[in-house]
Image (cartoon, rainbow, N blue to C red):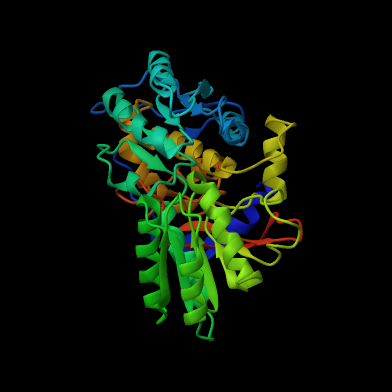
Length: 433
């Protein structure tokens, strides 16, 4: 057991005992499950005569991360997450006696058609699942390609809330929570205590902001807390006098600013005006798409004590060490855990389905993510598969329970605080949703 399994094991201990008790005397499986044959090779049991696998017997994972362009800084960590998972899988037993293969391509930027052309490359190379893209815009474009090719796409980083509403025919999944789900984490942090607080939400009413607003309001209502101010601005707003005047009038205890990377100029103006009005330190919270490095934007100390929330788990030291074994130069780890879990789930789905074809994997991903006997790593899941094919993989990024829409709920959210240099630092985190 790797050391980064310890925390997850503590979380699921009660559920595991319950599940094992329920299957302590399992009935014989109608279809043979897969099981390890030795330390370096893993062979699937011969499928029942009624099952004819459509795959070619070799599990190929395609990755489509932004290795060029504005968001290329996100690729290395996700590639390392996939590589770490594949290394563990191949060491623990492989799939059908063959090592899992990785085919990597660039997703490019939204203004180009790189994602379309390189997705075709992945299809031509017979990949069975695609991990990526990192961009929500590109993920939305990849959905149609996935349906045509009958290959599931699992994004570790696409957070656009409306992706849940896009028709994907069961071929799109993500191991990162939707943007609006942070409303639960915010509500818990701001209204979860015994002291009642007056909260104001200052946000851009675009697709993301509106989705977050609705979830946030509902989550606050569950805690008998309401917004005392609901202020809207746009990506081109520079004058915040009216908004600040109303904030002073209602005197909220906390102001939450909701905006995205697409509105950096307006976001900085909003933060500057709101902090100047006296809403500083823990009286100001930022959301996941504007919690960033402001060390060059404001003078030192402007944001000291300001809080923020970001989706995704903060990797443990042991998991970081595991990632660095695949890429010693790695310095950023965002979305690595989510990419690792996406890879594990895809491979486990292929094993349970006894078929590495994309259509079989897509149809089994939901089942291996929840509801069965919990297992925390590949070797442990193989052990469980000796007695039942009903597994529930809990990953390094959290429970990774898929909804029927392919979203992950509940999910891990991290809380951050700004230091005197206006840089955000992780403080704690929890699972919400």
